[in-house]
Length: 260
Picture 1 (spheres, helix red, strand yellow):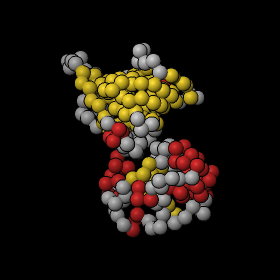
Picture 2 (cartoon, helix red, strand yellow):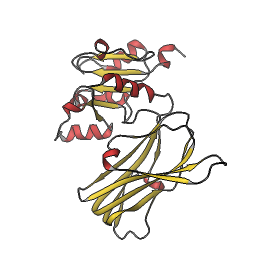
Picture 3 (spheres, rainbow, N blue to C red):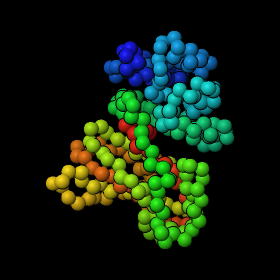
């Protein structure tokens, strides 16, 4: 395979190139456009790049000008400067942000961002998704359950005054400790509902026994949940909720990529 195809390529669109501001990690292909008017497809053809691993934008609205070129980027690999985050994006922009799961990020420390970006870019490990088909809702939940397409389940009802498990994924994830892993749950809720995400760590090796639970708050879930331990585990996932109202649960994504 050509060496150029083996290295991760990053596309940056903005007012100035990061190449002039920070030292880039070795083995990282960096491509800069000052605007979206130039076709990314032409750049890919000219430089013989099969795909980009991440897209870095100065402003989220730059997505609108990319058009068909957005197809070159996987969900969870698009990032933009959080200082330009919009409180009320247009319907079209909101759709694109959700389609690509674009994430606002603090670019004030570019060195740190690039370190994390490089660390989570692994070929052929885009990520596994635990879908709502693998989800089991608590049997005594008396509210409504509505399946929305293939990827989302909407619950509407009372979850109690204290955090209690409302749903659990039936399959475990095998974490082999060879690479850091990020986890991201897609969900939406109304303000009257609160959620926690639960991880149950179960030892893989026979001489270890027992398990441990760890819960993550909504604030912690705003960023991907990182697992970077030295020991292998089976991981079981659950969702805790309290309050009353609508809660829409989507896929649980696990990825060696930077799912931010």
